Length: 417
Image (tube, rainbow, N blue to C red; front, side):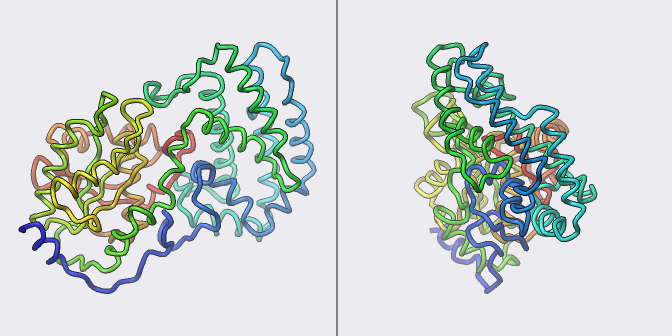
């Protein structure tokens, strides 16, 4: 009863809804493309396709035409050796390829109208390239292209050639790349990808299809699931956000990060239950009007259970938190991206940017979250600090203020960019 009374007393007033209903965009920006696996990982390519006059300019550029033809000629050699490495090598971007594209993009961006359409109206406005925001337009475009090309190469290296990712226990290829069967699969994938090209292809499309296909073959499409994020399981809570009187509670939301299970039978790890108990208590006390739960399909490797979805289920069924007061962030794979992804969700959903949220966890994890090690990991793995962290009012909490820099996309982490 206490929880029901508290939840009902949180109060609502009419405010403007988020700018991009259903999408996960920086307020003030509305993406002109769908929220899909390739656009989530490689937004630069989607922006090049959609920005006025860019697709035409890229198709007409003779240097890019020549490069595309040269790259197409490299693929299709089924009898190459050593296989399968050589099959994948044919799709990677060489240093010379990357330099050629960068030079042509710099030339095209000298056109003021083209630069404004892509760099100012899309890249800067979206926040997806926030780490490079201090660069001038041509340099920002060049840096974004180099990042995207390196990320394509990284997907190929990990999921076609068996190179270990940063977290091999949960992110590695699912195949034995030394097995003859895998060489045959990679050959089939390459031939099919080359055949799927169309007259409207831009210079990057074949490699984008190849990399996306590798993620699909490896069943590593996590970044494209639960999209668009403010629809589906978040729709009711997103609507409630738009009606909330934020003056009635000291914090905007309670943030709870998952703790993955270590066995295939468990839906969530044991520490999750501790964290949820603490969060449910704080919610019942009226500390914040919403709970945001964060965590993807992480532990054990290739688990079918999503941490955020399971946490929401437990909050509703075991702790009596109303479903429309819970937002799920179902993609984060580490504490770093827990922070970044909830910051994105808070800002995109319309939670007040100048109001602190409260991270709720066990006391050991709170010590880690507020310490220097995580802050350094944020920079090393994501390139940005996604918000400001400060000690909370007790040892189970930390205060968090989201930053727009959280919208920067780290394409080198294709499972959670």
